[in-house]
Length: 73
Image (tube, rainbow, N blue to C red; front, top):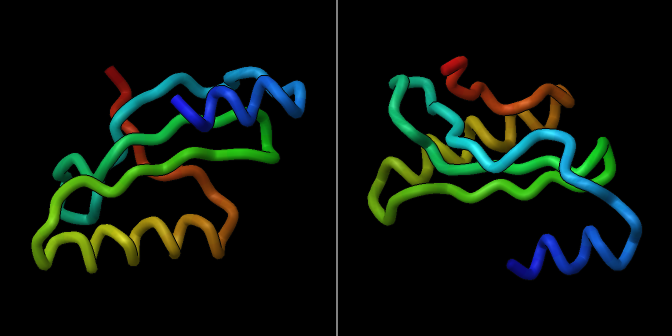
């Protein structure tokens, strides 16, 4: 994964493992992994109109500086 390579090059390690995050409909919105507070990888699942809603969830999370909602398995 390219993000892992970038994290290694700047000396960051995984602080939140790769996991699914949920959109407002409680569906898997995509996947995320965090490397400290400086780097967060987030992927949006799908290719339909749901992507627009999921991207709003991602943007909202970014703007309020809170993590994406994830499963508590």
